Image 1 (cartoon, one colour):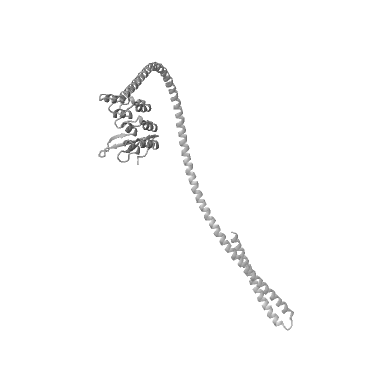
Image 2: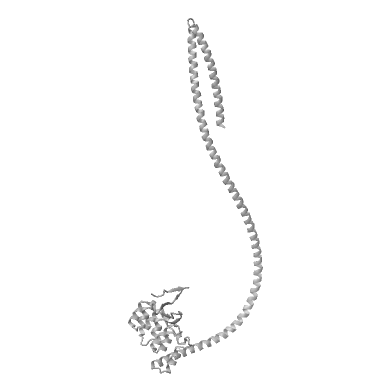
Length: 357
């Protein structure tokens, strides 16, 4: 319904509502002079009390007027003082706020004729400086009352005029007193300033000497800093060189790791081949052992046959000769088999040497 409260830089910006589009309920109650409703609304909705009601020209969007609820109350007559008191308690700053014409609530109640001593007192308690505040026409509340006095002022207005005049005179006397005290204080300050100026010049001279000394020390430190910067630059160059070498070593390390990986794969492959060769050698050994057993069995059989043939000397001579010939043939075969065994042993030895390699 109303524009939201905005906070910027820790300072609360005033709320605003358009008179024709979204006026606050408090402003409506006051505008209709429904004091009971306005009093209850002000007590229960403090945001309405500090909300400005504005009216802009629809064609140009230029501000035509701008009032707080306290301004609207002071523009009317016979407003309950209780309502004024509540509005000021809820939003004390309202007594200081000036509308679009620079008028405070005290200006408005003096202008519209509803001013009383009690009303003026309530407003002045919250904002004593309002008695000297000028609107955009350079008028104080007392000036406005004096203008209306020419048109016939009642006793209430005269009473307020006396009160405002007395308060204004009192403020002027306070101002003059303060100005007098300030003049005496100013003379004393001028004398004190002259003495302080001489002392300051001496201090300045001493500080200038110290500044020269400090500049010399700073120059020395600056030279050391420059030397340090050069060393840091040299260190930086060395660090960069070491970094490059480290990168080269890292590259070489990665290359060696790749080579080691390939060698490991080669070793695995050779181990697999060795396993295959071991199987072939074992198979050859088994085959040769079987052939050796067969040859030994045959030799044993041949020897038994030869012994039997030699025992049969008479009738079996022809058979003996035949057996002898067979034995000779067997011996020849044995020699061949032994030669084969020797060759197989040589082959085995060669394969074992290769396997060891």
